[in-house]
Image 1 (cartoon, one colour):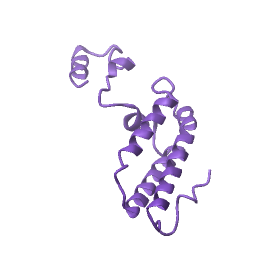
Image 2 (cartoon, rainbow, N blue to C red):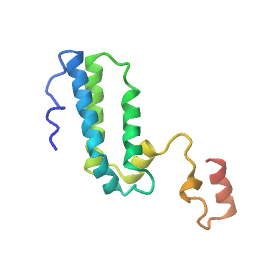
Image 3 (tube, rainbow, N blue to C red):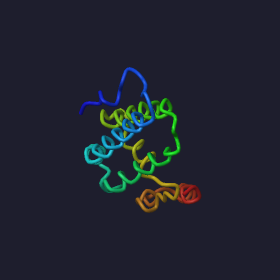
Image 4 (cartoon, rainbow, N blue to C red):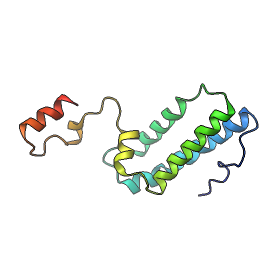
Length: 129
């Protein structure tokens, strides 16, 4: 997978060029989802469709940015994030914490709480859920 088209020596000349680079990063990110799901073994936690949806949500958060230099910076940061997952520099828990868990995450749904812990630990985890 070559990322040379995304990483350029200079910044984008204008907004359409910067937007094209953003779109290319989005496409590469979405195409990498099956590999990431298999590599990090998150089939039981999230489906590829859920992960793609989360990626789309993250990209849409930044739709109001119209400065080409700011878009170039975000592309570089996004590319770095993608490469960290593809090279497994980031671990499974990073992926789950950043892209799978939502604000309404409940550890009881994953069976994390009932593993024979003490009553104190169960109450503590339930209070923070």
